[in-house]
Image (cartoon, rainbow, N blue to C red; front, side, top):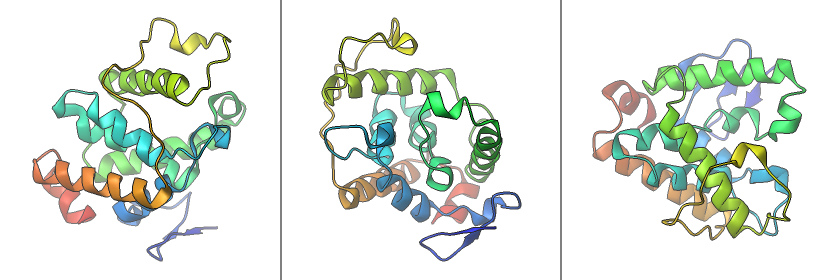
Length: 185
């Protein structure tokens, strides 16, 4: 069983290797995946979310923040309440995440600063995408919205360009190691 990616690779979930990971496949898929399982007033992509996360962390964490949801390019963005009910999915997602982290020389586990940025973006998205109906989101207790970011959703093609531009910018700045650049363009 495999997924055929845009680049034509056959991504076998149980036997994939780091060579099966392609940055353009990641950018394309994430730009076409809507956050919040599509339950937003207008399309807002995981790619745009990832780029915005990369801007609110210290520069040394920008690449990790850009790539923090890259596994979703192969596994989709499953809402946390559902993900908790799917242990097999979580195993596969963790395996794909590990392959991406290996390919791009990222830390084995997500850095706390990136996790915090992800939550800050969630709070900001809740504010800017008008998702706040007054219900408490416990995961956001004591997490502020970003004062630096205003979420204005982009179309998928725009989000793809934004993601690839940020990837290339970080590559040129030396944020991506030599192994990652030889594997990711």
